[in-house]
Image (tube, rainbow, N blue to C red; front, top):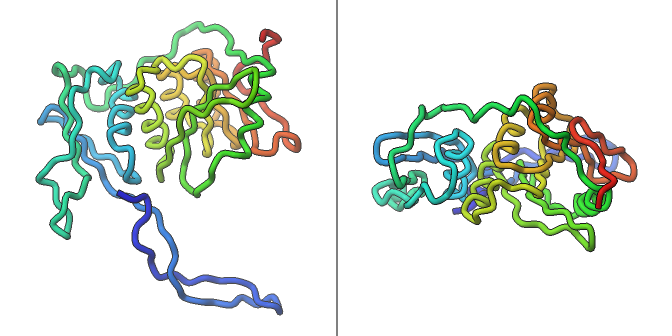
Amino acid sequence: MSTRTPRVSALHLSPDATGSLRTERRAADVLAEEVLTLRLDGHRSFSLPRTPGHDVELAHGFLYAQGLIHSAAQVREARYCAGAQGPDGCNSYNVLDLRSTRPLPGAPDAPAPAAPEAAETAAIAEPALRALLRLLPALPSTGMHRATILAPEHEGAPRLPLSREDAHAVNALDKAVGALLLQRRVPATGLHLVLASPPTLDLVRRAARAGLSGVFSPAPPTAAAVEHARACGLLLARASETPARRPVVFYSGVLSDRE
């Protein structure tokens, strides 16, 4: 499966030597977006528009975000449905059958547990923050939403456990959390999330539920996201890819003097 569809015809506009716009019709890349159907235990179905790729991780992250599973061990099987065929007669890879270890309770749209009423103030040590900021300019940019999980280290460069992309920001994060679930790294304490999109309430809820320690983005968060981050003790910060020219802003959390 590719994250790109065959190229499409598009009108390209570019200025010429005189400043006038020159038009040219030629091929252009587009991102793929297809609907993935998750079938749980043969009787429950979920439809997720997504960019193909890392579908099993996406399924785990989605079920976890909905409060339907608490660990990867609760999904004993995930396989593409053999009867799902596309126009060419081949498997479309757009129907994923999931089998749980036991019937999963709750409604399909069951919300994630509410944030605790009282939580410790989130904090990050200055060496760890500096290590994380050094890596931001090196993160890839493909035009899609990206969710990157970092483990800042006090010595040397931060480790980059994983990075996932999708045309939808929530899906990118669900893929990343799904990968952590499969690696048995949830709760993800000590790991930080870097988003390529504004942190919304839905994204911050997902990050907090996965136990991530912080969320960084070059864009400011929503007011509701800030409120939730403060309530559950999650570090929430705006950090651009050029921190020397734009200050880091902590909306939730503090800079710690502890190593």
